[in-house]
Image 1 (cartoon, helix red, strand yellow):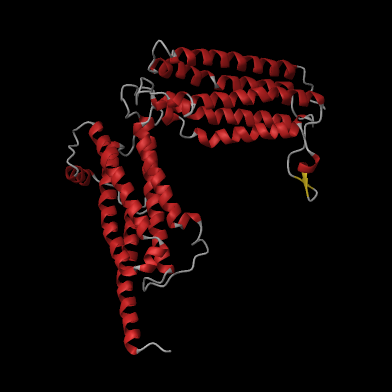
Image 2 (tube, one colour; image 1 turned 90 degrees about the vertical axis):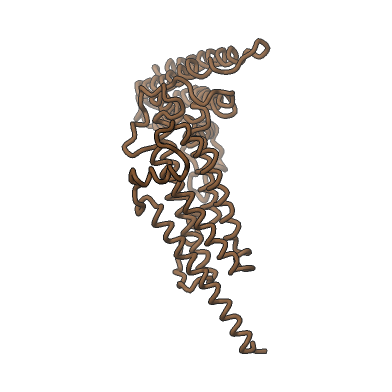
Length: 415
């Protein structure tokens, strides 16, 4: 049965109402994206910063602590709440059930986001001014939690939040509204429209993670702050260990799939096999070292937010996992090519010596700046526990390196 003229008119009126709100929403998200993406955003000028701080009831002459307090206790939680609200309204089921009211609510949230993001960018511009000091200053140990390493990380996370979190969210929201035909603007089919980058839920998750990272950059201990990037390299060390074990114990059925090898060829020559076996304790001790200093070990202790360590030393801690993983990969590479006679004894020993030095600075920094600050009592002796652990680990690593170097010195570079 065909719809009556009145029914058709009601549908058309409803569609026009949705399109009215949808077009406004589309324009609003595009405006926000242009305003806050680093490629198109205007840089805050001093006068605008003063005005924004006045609105926040913050005197520029006040300490950085006032800015940090406003950031951590107000702006970041507020932005988190607004993003969460937007994500709920943008759910496909919600938009399909009540398109008009939900789009109207999106318009309200856009205004709230604009206000919060505006305040946030001016606060960050004051706390982390343009042309900041190098992130690895060696003279800022007195700057409490506002050392250059922390501020540089805060600024980087802020840029990621706005450009890749919020702006991707705005784009993804417009794509969803267009695909649902809730706007009069033709939806441009994009092959990447369903990819994670332009997905609303993924963008929301990314933005909320960046907010947490911004908060952590000023509120966690310096040891925890230094370990943020360790998670990029620790899995590599795990994979490296597994690869060496597999090449020491090759399995016929796991080495070939449809006639093609799935792993590098196994170690063949006895000298190479011996060196590979001596590499295992070195890799395992490297893993143990990073794990002991991480969130499930030393970093979980109740450290103050700041110590007398400087940014240059924090940077050293931050890079140690990367440097350790790099030398371990080099060691594995030497083993892979040793059976061909393309590796010398000096190649092995020089790599082992380099790896050994990678632990010196981080171990010293931990012993000097962090372990002495662990709250202690007579019954637990936590400080002594960590000191003794460090000494035991150091002796074991020294022995593992010594055994490897001793075997490498007699390596002839032939199978």
